[in-house]
Amino acid sequence: MKVNLEALAKEVEIKIEPVYRLIDERALENHIKVLASFQSARVSEFHLKGSTGYGYGDTGRETLENIYAEIFRAEKALVRSQIVSGTHAIALCLYGVLRPGDELLSVQGEPYDTLGEMIGIRGEAHGSLKDLGIVYRQVNLTGDGEVDFLALGQSLSSRTRMVLLQRSAGYRWGAPLGINKMREIIIFIKGIKPDVVVFVDNCYGEFTELEEPIEAGADLVAGSLIKNPGGGLAPSGGYVAGKEMYVDMAANRWSAPGIGAEVGPSGDSQRLLYQGLFLAPHVVSEALKGAVFASMFFESLGFNVLPGYKDPRSDIVQGIMMGTPEKMLAFCRGLQKGSPVDSHVLPEANPMPGYGDPVVMAAGTFIQGASLELSADGPMRPPYAVYLQGGLSKEYVKLALLSAAREVLGC
Image (tube, rainbow, N blue to C red; front, side):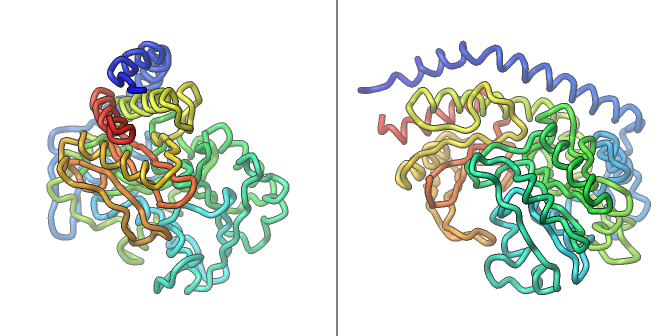
C-alpha cells in the first residue's frame, strides 16, 4: 500500500506540538543562562577578534573560556579551535589525567567505537593507554540497559583513578544517560571512592537539559564544538571543562607541560565560536524537535525507534532500527539527497579510522562532520540501526526525512 508521506508528516506535526512546546521552554531557560554569562563577562566587539602566532594575551579567547566555565558551572574551561573532534577532546582528558599503573573504569560497558583504539581494547594503534601501562576495565550494563550498581561497587578499587561516563549511547541501541541518573551514579561512586575522577563524554548532550554534568557532580567533561555548543557556526574545535587542576592537566596534554593554555591563536574563528555558543540553545532545540518528528514519523511507518517521541531526551540522537543493511543504505542515501551540500553524492559503507565495522554516513553539511547540522550514520552490523543527529531547523529535518522515507519505501 502506497503511503502519502506528506499527509502523514502533517498528522505527526499536529500530535507532537505539545512536545515542541516543552522543548521551547527548556531552550528559553538555557538561552537565559547563556545570555547572562555573556553579559557577566562584558563581551565586547574587540573580544571577537582573533590572534596569530603563539596567541599570547588573547583576551577574547580567555573571555570565551570564562563563559564556558560559567555556563557549565566549572572552575575552568579550555576551548580551542585546534581540538579537532570530540574524540580528541576526550583524549586530552584521559592522557592528561591518567598515569602508568592507573585504572580507567567504564561503567556503561564498552565505550563509543572511536575510543576503542585509544584505550587499547581494539586494534593496534601506537600510543594507546594500554601501551602506556594504564589498565582498562568495564562494568557491563544489566540486561535491561541499566547501570549495574552492585558490580560497579565491587569494581571500584584503590587503583581506580578515573571513571568514564558517556552522555550519549553512541552506536549502542539504548537510552542516553540523563542528568538525574548521572547524579545518582556519581553520588554512589563518590560514596565509595571520593578521590576518583569522574569524567563525562558530553558529546551530543549540551543544552538538551537544564543542567550539565558538572552540576551532577562530575569532575571533568569534554565535547566537540561542531556538535551542540558550536551552534552550527563553529568551523572546528572542542572544549574541556571542570575542576581547575584537571583542566590544566588536559591543557598540558593539548600543548606541552609548562605551556598549557597560555598559548593558542584563535585565528579567524573567534566570532564564530562566540556567536555559535550564543545560538546553541536555540539550534539544539531545533535538532530536538527534528528528532521528535523523526521518532513519531518512522514509528508510524512501522520502524522501531529510540527514544520514543514523548520520552525524555538527554542528547540529540535519534535511533531508527532499519533491520537490514539495504534499508540502512537507503535511509542514508535519501537523507543525503535531501541535504543542501553534496546532495548528488551516494553514501556507501566503508571502513573508517577508529571504527570496528564499516560505517555508512550521510552528512550534507556546510562544515565537514558537523553533527549538529544534520547527519545520519551507523555501523553495518545488527540491529542495522541508523542514528540521526542534528538539524539546523526542524523544517530542514522534516524535508530531509521525507526524502529518506521515499528512498526506504521506494516511493
